[in-house]
Image (cartoon, rainbow, N blue to C red; front, side, top):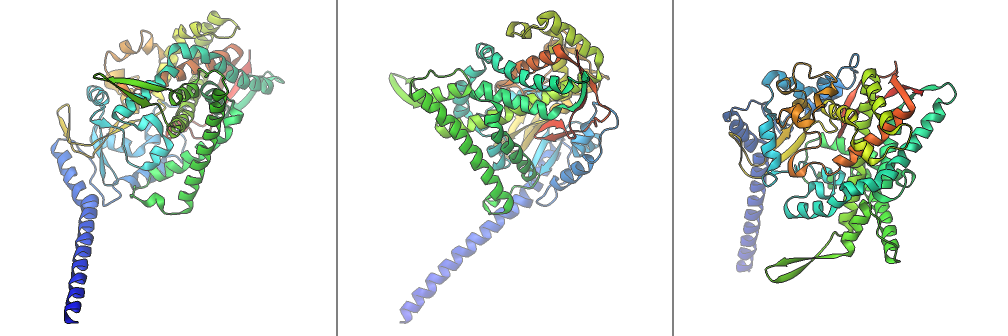
Length: 527
């Protein structure tokens, strides 16, 4: 009996010891995560000569960023000024005046180092082995799934599979889809303006619908009406994701069944179901012998149905293409990123041309000389020099994404800096695009003539212009977006003149991408 009691007591002591070790180890890990390691990294960065904010327990700078942004968005910009950085990112604007161009801030317990030197940006964005896509919050993976978040061989494999969809020959085949979508919007505008020859309208919702329709037709062979529910859900998901990203990420918190988390999962499940329906419909068409369509979905489906062979030495290894889930992820990514990028490019272009009537007239003259009133063709679009200059300047002043982020998984050299493992690196597109050292003291002015001899001459060989990223991971849809924008602008300029409405309130804001907070009201006149 005494022996049994002794054994029982020993077992209890062992269990208590193990439990104590687990609890103490967990506490030490949490303390290291939220305090010891951030303070160590703060000293590290300061010793490198990089100034920055003092670390605040757990939250870092997230509360200050959120409160300052909320306050800034309450007030539109007085007049139409292209110097809107204090409004879209007041916290970083404050640090720019305090620390200069390069500094570090805190995304919770993680330091984020701001790097603005073009030569360092080029070095980092070219080095895809050490500078990886950030993993700050799994919510981002839901919003931006697919190859954009892959690394290494998986990224290279998916990029290779998707590349054919964006070759020039494929873009030429998509032109009728671009035209049909633009014609639908322009027909609507002509009907609205028919009675008096002019009308006042908010073009932002129509441009969103236009780019959504283009994506649906060109990428998936459907129309906006068929994909409309997907776009509505993506808009809701984006709004929820943005709110979540402004909070400090706590591992596992997204699994707690809060109202917000449940709704996010419901939206995600519905998007997945709708995309799966589109994919299964295409799969059935292929199975009954219909030819594979030359759109994005067709190319992705082709990768599922075919196996590729890779020769390693003398051995042939069978490799499968994408899984159905991977195809769904790529479709969701293209739906979201493709639609948003083009709609924001178009809205800022039309707003700037509304303000700068001289450039609107020059663009219209070029379009009419090239196409008269005929349907724009691919060859003609590729030779619109004035329009290219305008689009480049719009992308300089109003890039769709205002900064690129990367993370490093080991201590990494960048120029003369030694950056610590786990740090985030931010490359501020918006600030580099309007750096007086590279663009001159008229940096905030709309001057498309900067690009009269192309991007390389305009930047004097510096990496001071990268609206679609840089290096191997440059946005794959860049040519798609530019071609769509040229088609839409050409057709609009053929039929209308436009100017800013007195109701327009210049209020740029970032909701993932840079967009007008209160719409884009213009006065439209039929020619």
